[in-house]
Image (tube, rainbow, N blue to C red; front, side, top):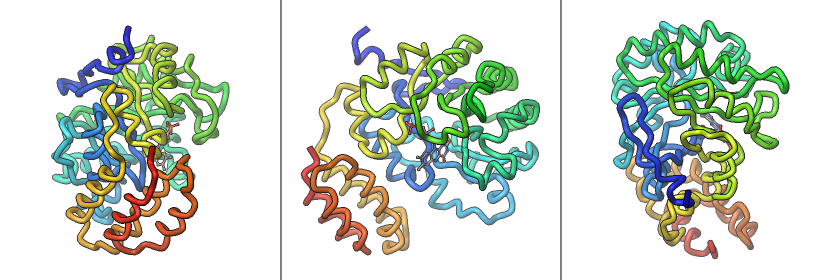
Length: 319
Ligand SMILES: Cc1cc2nc3c(=O)[nH]c(=O)nc-3n(C[C@H](O)[C@H](O)[C@H](O)COP(=O)(O)O)c2cc1C
């Protein structure tokens, strides 16, 4: 199959159809609505919010406005949640902030101690019965439920196949498998064999994630695992135009892409100074691998307003 053919498959997720099978991963601190709109325009088949706390939503401490706004380009829309109490999670999904989304994705892969010590995120991999109850409870809301998991907590204690089967049995309409264990965090090669074991165990679409920074790595991921699609994370965080390469469309000028993103940020965030400071790390991520990036990086970290960042975007030689 041609390269374009491989990445033009629409995926059916509980009745919703995606534009193609190259998805954008949830990235805490990065994938807000302006970012998600931008990557959709560049060709992402599906986008999802960063993870939000169900407890935070139910008890009112989570700032939902900016975290849970749906981008204009997002259809179907998907929000990611984390938690461990099935009842609280169902209540969260029934709140207007979440019920407006088409798809709810459950985080069962986050490795950070803040979540894991509460038995959330990847800690659920060692509690398959609870994870199953969570998905079953969430399906009662009538929403399409998906799961994002890792292959286990430690090397050679993989849970992939068994866990994926349980999630499908509980009602998950799609399963994303990040092909690393919790203890590896984000380093090392993804384990293709483990991802393939999930593909072979379930009939719902499996999306493969981990270590895709180029079209070649995406092709390798698809062919080695047999997954229905792939999910880009840091690859697109550094270089959102990677989506153009996957969909074989010409790369637009990056300075104008960033400037359009900044215009959207100005429209979404009422506090522009906060928004500018918040955007700095994203700008720096875009400088990854850019020649002469160091000088711009210092200027980016000194910037406190969106206009300065817009001007800096045109100073960089992006190609
Ligand atoms: C800064 C950062 C934030 C992340 N936030 C989330 C998140 O909110 N939810 C989630 O499921 N995964 C999150 N992840 C994990 C990614 O979605 C992805 O699974 C992981 O980075 C592996 O893909 P990669 O090797 O292509 O980067 C995050 C990763 C990074 C680097």
